[in-house]
Image (cartoon, rainbow, N blue to C red):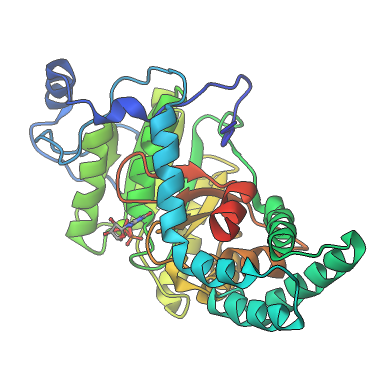
Length: 379
Ligand SMILES: Nc1nc2c(ncn2[C@@H]2O[C@H](COP(=O)(O)OP(=O)(O)O)[C@@H](O)[C@H]2O)c(=O)[nH]1
Ligand SMILES: [Mg+2]
């Protein structure tokens, strides 16, 4: 059911084993892999993939490390817990929406209340108008009479609206598959990379991470920690050029036959010209390391930023054409209407939402499902 990774052969994924303690063997392996001293990575011009990677510190990770990528059936408990995280996150929007449909009949006031609730859930004016018009049509055509029936109709309209954004990442289409992860500060880029590394490992992929956020040492360390948790290498360079780090990582990925290289980038505002320019540069340099790279340019959006998500998508897409999105923090106080707005405003050219983030843990990344989000919003 969770075909969020498009594979030649579908492999069921599980989340359950990640709560295990790191094994002694795994810890020893991580230690053995650590270089004695972190060496500076060479500049872009040096195409050598031999730059010493800075392997994430082998100190005990805060969160239990991932087990070897054993593939076992999906854990029912894990699934219901993320669904409840999603429901909890969207509770505010659901609370507003659900109370509207309690009546025995569909009064004209229902549409007015619905309009207010949709606007409050950050669906935006246009999307709200679209949904209300569609619901009116449906109520008339199907001769719906009760609030419950109207709610079910809206749920299905919303799911239909969201569905074009439902698409898996094709992780087998290149090797290494190079993913560039962009977004504003605090959106959840680094955290999503950490979770994604875990998921991709479970799908049998080897991973290499590139610490392209070279502005802050803390950002590099944060990625290194996720690397340690997943026992994957992190290519980093103190205060260096993000494009150089990205280049090194892809070169190393080619040399080692790595499955997926994920490039973290510095947080930026669309108005920060030099930072947006840097994104362009990373893309150019990635293509030098491997034609067609980056294969995926993924924008990470904080689900709480509401309508501003649309502006971010537009701005980043101009600089680095986006292939997909990750919407994070849907476990928080997120207003789910923004997802509908995203779907409606991009209906001519939908951008896939590859994943949603429903927590800070390693397992809190899920495939986006239109039906599940619609159900979380409309019960
Ligand atoms: N509740 C919740 N917190 C998240 C999620 N994703 C990221 N965060 C938190 O958001 C903060 C910023 O995340 P980070 O990955 O550092 O963002 P970045 O600046 O884009 O790299 C951190 O405290 C994360 O733990 C999510 O899906 N749910
Ligand atoms: Mg970061």
